[in-house]
Image (cartoon, rainbow, N blue to C red; front, top):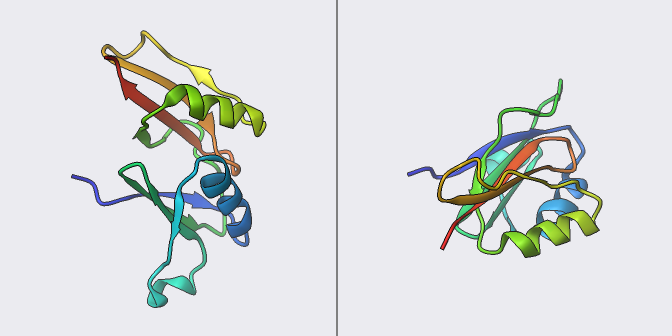
Length: 118
């Protein structure tokens, strides 16, 4: 089992991260332990997953590497992402037994969302 996945973000981008991960995806921010809070970044939880966004001073978005996140309602999420200006690229039929799409977060990091076919 995986406890969390960490992806990178630029320094000072916490408000943009919150707007995307809480405002668009509907996750909840999880307070960072005080010993780690001074490093910047932020943590989010929801839908059975935990994502940590960690500051990288020489930030470059992950365009290929990505977390694959199981999500309860892909159609609703895709609509919310597109309404917020985030392109969605469907890959149905490419992974047997799964519906899926890719998008990018506010920092340009690639994200994959999946749901098992009924």
